[in-house]
Figure 1: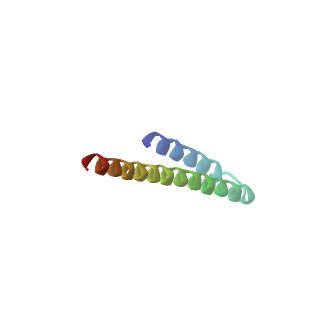
Figure 2: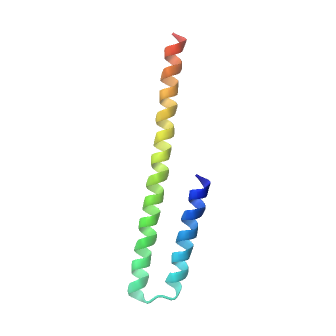
Figure 3: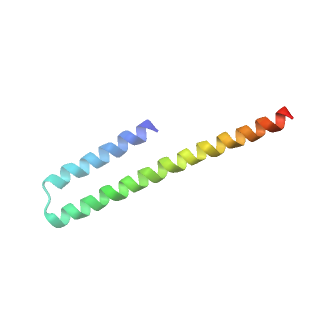
Length: 68
């Protein structure tokens, strides 16, 4: 999880560096690229969190079954 955050930050920072020297049209394109990267990263983390919650729920239900 932490490694993907560092990769994400590195990609965004690289794009920001390119953006500094770019013209307006290119700046808009690079901004959109940052937005898509952010969206993909957030979607991935949300999916991970949902998977963890689902597994926790599964474990709880299994625990209840064994206790009966």
